[in-house]
Length: 243
Image (cartoon, rainbow, N blue to C red; front, side):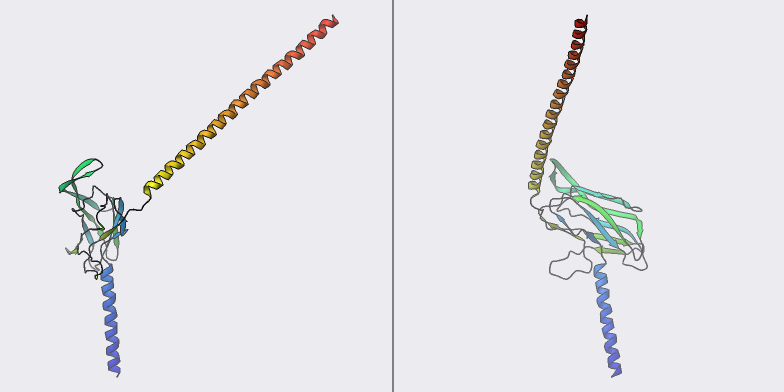
């Protein structure tokens, strides 16, 4: 009886350990933050790279950008201790961006020269755009290289409704752009017009006030001059009468 209890306890412990190990493996992979961005816009995407090994350090990350939805602007942010290389490739068909014909686009970004120690992670920020308007996601396949020459290929594309693959690729979800953007601009323009009208009215009022003040001052000075002249005339007239 005791033996059966021990076997059951051992089996349960092994099952729990297997679940925890699987969960840890599934969650500790190269990912992107934020996980979603608006279609047709620009976004700063952080590639989060955890070190999954206890006896090796990550020394290189390679991220491939999709060529079927080329991005016209890709700018990595400098990461202290790491060198970055941006690779461009010719496009099968040129695309137009801001009135210009683009015949090449960034196809890969490589970080190297640094080190992610065991138990640590590193983020690699990239500003990218213009994000496609005709896609609901960007699959950003990545290769993680360790100093023991091991290469982990995060290239499996997750499928909706299916279990997460063993080595999933980072995926940036693309959502429809928020509505009302132009309306907001129009509202701001309207507010600007109202503010301008208010400022003009205030300036006109200030101008009228200044004109009124100036007139009052001139009249006041003229009154003082007339008063002084009257006093002087009275004094002279008195002297003449006395003489």
